[in-house]
Image 1 (cartoon, helix red, strand yellow):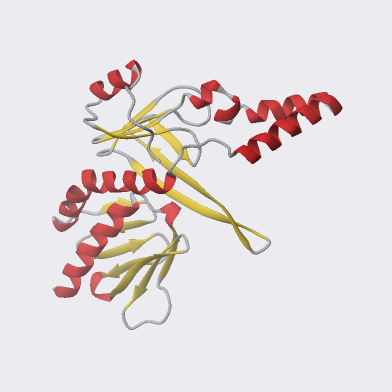
Image 2: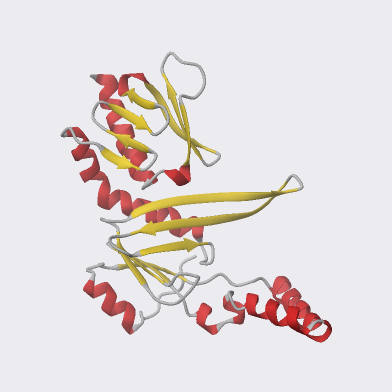
Length: 247
């Protein structure tokens, strides 16, 4: 969940002003271990250090990736603003600033299945800005089921109208695996499908499924993680598809 409102650091204030990010909409902090897992890690560290020094030191070094064992990691933040984001990536140092109107956002959400039992869900959002500005934002931060969809909606708000207008005016809008135009949808593997032949575009089990009218089965099946700005793609495709069928 979003952290309780706190004053932004001086660095974040300066970056938000310099990049014209607008109002702060949410701040998310690193996810902490639950008490049982924390206690287990402490026990394992002590046991390894007593019995096997080198493995114990390596395990302690690995634990420093988590906020529970590193003040540096605990101090990291994900800030979402009206016009962009500021984030300290989980790995490494530094701060990344990206605006919603220029970002290419990739979403990859997977759930592990362990012996037939659903396990933890992993969230990875890759935000690629202009130039060298890019960041991998993961479940390292609390509330990915909140900040993930919020980021997608912010990108939709910032880029959706222009993307739709470009397609309606005869342009082609690139969404990675797919591209959209006024006349149809094109995929990397299946070529072009006119809007009059598109029956449905839906998301299922981490895949984007496109079915065609008069056909059996799925015309195209692509991983969600291969689609840039997923919510913009779905919104623009929905508008163009409706217009194409009505024409």
